[in-house]
Image (cartoon, rainbow, N blue to C red; front, side):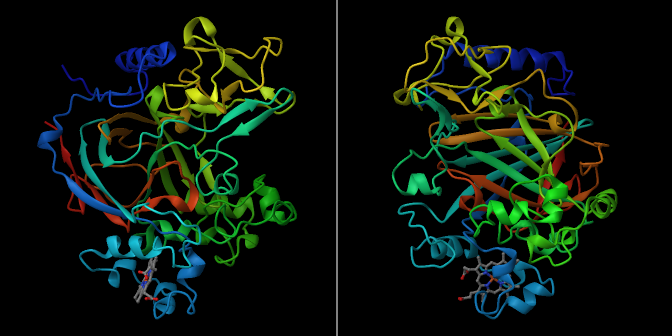
Length: 449
Ligand code: HEC
């Protein structure tokens, strides 16, 4: 019997999702040591699939603009501007290790925040395979079991954010604990985005984005293009979406962007998330063009804040979770995932809330995830200090916001890992690699028997 995932409607997968949700709902799974949810059910014998060792390093503030600034990227700005590949120069055997350590030395302008003890690089083992229906990527890395996401905490009057990513000011000032989910992501192009093959993810990383000298809310609100995009901050964008790629303010208007997108001038962005997708067996599906967009349809997760009432939308079902809320001392001691259809019930404002009660900022919605946004599945387990994540992506996707993977195809991919309660520039990234679906490349997805 073929145990592999066929599609979202596969009944076996639904059963898995339900049992995973049930385990999470019961709050049975301990945090340290034991396997936490998401066992790989693909049935693949990974011992027979070749392993690729990748080194991901800490890039700090090495934005598109920094790389093209002769006073900063000394001796390399014009070469980078004309499109030379990063690894045409950064080609030493231990280049990523050297660069990560240098940027995190505490003395480098690319990382002004001191992060003592944080390693400059992480080794990630990647295996790839495919069959008639899907491509399977298996990642393994040693990292922390970051399954938590910031909460809303009731202070007696209002629900306020509790916890934040490590680089955020309130954490740096010691006012909030560092809380953020682990993530393993890739950006992928099929040759249609100029320079992606040579310079990968760095094409999307610009001044003005969060944690890169962010644009002010007022600046963004005053900008016609950002208004047209209906966005209140600047996020990853591709050079082609701007008339001046080094200036987020010069965004092209939606009709022009639609033409670029229709011609395939966007990159796919697939993110596995330890809190917001893994507990329900998913990995989200997005793309980058003028912003870091999600694909059409519905994600595995939704905000748990009602903008009108300024109160959460959902709370825990006490009968199934053991309590209707979480307290600060329970963070990282158990699975605090709020999951529709498993342990979430509509928020009751009259439930007798006490100061210190906390609810997750996002509610997971396995049954609502639909469309192109819900194309990917994933199973992740953290055990003995190591994550093992298996990502399943269908072949031949025909959505206008996806890059279709096809047998025989070779793609350019950049990987990113968020570890240690961090987001934005605090991730580890790879130089561009090629991924071949049964074709010669840096990482070859082998055909399964
Ligand atoms: C023409 C050669 C060349 C190219 C192409 C090039 N670099 Fe560099 N890069 C250098 C040199 C040389 C330095 C070191 C400058 C110094 O010591 O101050 C450097 C420094 C850096 C640093 C700071 C850490 C360090 O190693 O000193 C980063 C990060 C970096 N480059 C990333 C990139 C990325 C990303 C690309 C591709 C988009 C790229 N470089 C393309 C030559 C190059």
